[in-house]
Amino acid sequence: MAQAPSSETDEAPRPTARVVWKGAISFGLVHIPVALYTATTSSAVDFDWLDRRTMEPVGYKRINKKTGKEIAAADIVKGVEIEDGQYVVLSTDEIKAAFPKTTQTIEIESFIQASEIPFVYLERPYYLAPINRGEKVYALLREALLESGRVGIARVVISTRQHLAVLVPSGPALILNLLRWGGEIRSFEALKLPPAGVKAAGLKEAELKMARQLIEEMTAPWDADGFRDSFKDEIMRLVRQKAESGDVQSVEKVEPASGGSAKPGAEIIDLTELLKRSLQGAEPAAAKDDDGQPTRSKPSAKTAAKPRAARKRA
Image 1 (cartoon, rainbow, N blue to C red):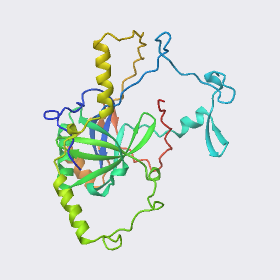
Image 2: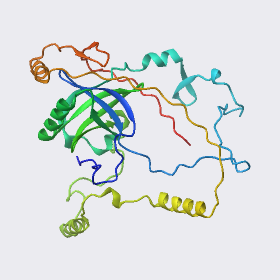
Image 3: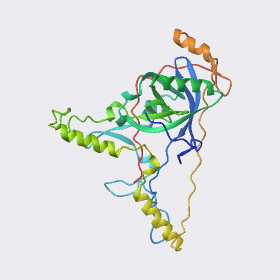
Image 4: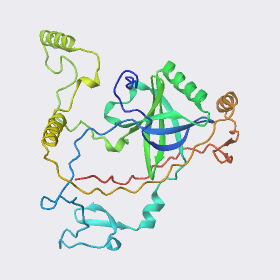
């Protein structure tokens, strides 16, 4: 897998922006305390809805789709459609009971060759950085992965949602890239695709030669900054043009409420001893969290809870 942008040479979002989660990477009996940071930033133009008569922000209401009338939050229940128009209603307690247990641990379940994961499974990247004196064992895992050409397949619970993820070394960093579950990827077998192979597809050697030559001529080093969102650039050009001419409307802003802090992860203990114990299959020695309380490595969850559907903004 290609290396992530360097903060020294590329204008990439630096991972110091916001801590999403704190916990530990767990493999064998080794715990690596880490913090999770967002690795991406949205480049889409954010169009807010405004009342054209008063220039006041426009919000959303909970409306009964049949009657068109607004309803109270207390009258709303959650249901899953199993057939056309047929729903199974679940209570709040039933849904909460299905949430996966939060362990604050990135549980590595296996290691595989990096080339084995199809790009279609990659969903969202995060940076991982060591905390609580975990730099040495963080570097150990990173270098071992780089030398072996392998990546770690893991499970992690962020907020109340369980994710499948891949732990990838990239330069000096470890990247946690969330993966789509196997059942979320549609098969291409139903598509009308040409058969695999030169002869089976009816290709001529001359055609293949010219295609290879064209690919060779168009080959260039990867440069993310060389590709621009032309729609965003044009919209922002129009925004700047109107702003410079004084065509600006005043809109009262509503400040969002601040969220809580994430739980701290576990501190690392003697590295050599933990590696020996992991290879020998021994019980883990006690590590301590930020409060000085002993922690133990927990077994990986074998059953994934069905994630809640993410709310999308219209």
